[in-house]
Image 1 (cartoon, helix red, strand yellow):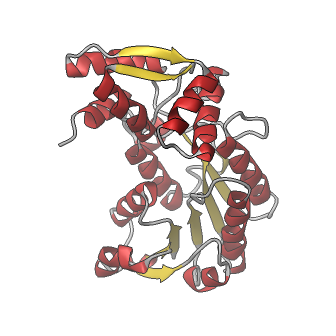
Image 2 (tube, one colour):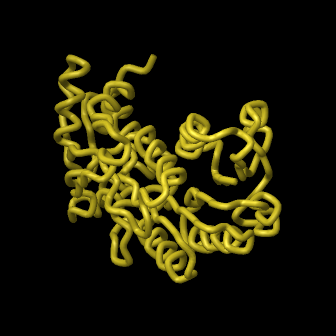
Length: 287
């Protein structure tokens, strides 16, 4: 049995959909915090059980009978994220899973300027040290992250943010397809993968250019001082922790941490990954 965590989230839900195109529903289980949100999966024949990384006792039941477990990284900021990921990995190991997969990030590193990369690096190290077959999916930077900056830019005509750098923005749909392939195709991806990215990199100057082209309005990129930007977004209501988190992303981008592309994703899914322009168009012109 395949068990997927976070199956009602943006990535996990798409992974489950792609798996259901490949395997019978009765071979698939999901571990979710709120089973009511997964009612539609239960109706399709998927085993739905409650599991919470912060309450490891729930995971024994959620992972029961698993041959492979895909741990979608905990949506937690701070030091608790590593503990939560480890709890899920330990539970998968205790359940007898023959292989454990984890959704990591293209820039996972112990010295990253972006806090989640420290969590991913520590989790990868822990998973590799268990001595069981594993895959750490080093996912490209989620293109949907652009929605925050784009939404404000469409309101003001200015894309205001600290200095940044090129990012290989990658669509959830392509990464979900890759994860499904990694689960069902033996040997498709083992160990720590190459960066699973779309082939194109854009910085925010280029994003502003695409927005201008797509909307027919001039969207101007404005580079803000780090501390002034932080003070401004906090004054507008962003929590301090979120402001520091986001500022770390910009600092890492301008250091070049996300300026990486690799052909592995395209080779695995068998088609060219979604162009970031398509993602920007969808954000700028929602149905």
